[in-house]
Image 1 (cartoon, rainbow, N blue to C red):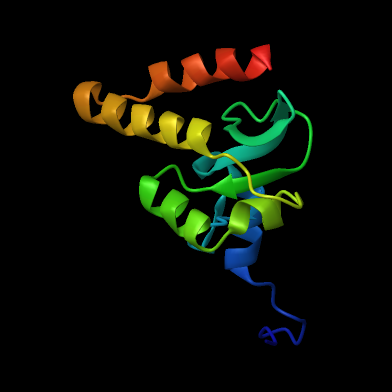
Image 2: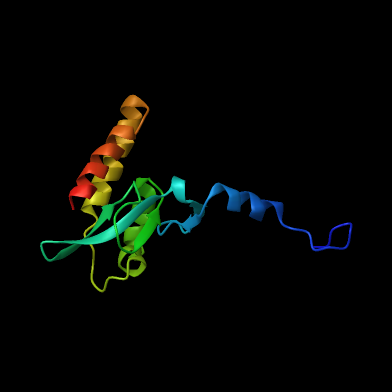
Length: 129
C-alpha cells in the first residue's frame, strides 16, 4: 500500500501487535494470541515417563507449546495429537497435569471470580520439578 506522500505505508495493526508483546499460536484451535493470554506447556521426564506440565510463569526450561487456558483447546490438542508434535517428543505425552491445572483454574474462576490461586499452586509445583 502506498501512502499519500508516495512512501510505503506501514500496517498500523502490525505495529500495534508488536508493541503488545510476542504472538503465539494455540496448539489446540490454531488461533494466534498474545503470549500473556496463552498457557505455556513444556515436556518433562518424570520417572522415565514424559509428561506435559503447565508453565504459567514461563520459567521452566525446554521447548514449550502454547495453549488457550480452556478445556476445549486442550481436548482439540489431544484429538489432533498436537502435544508430541509441538514439543518434539517421539511418543505420547501424559497431559493429566495440564488437564488438572485447567480444571482447577476453571473451577477457581467460577467459584471466586479469580484464578490466581490455581496459578500460584501450579507455579510452586512446577518449580519443584
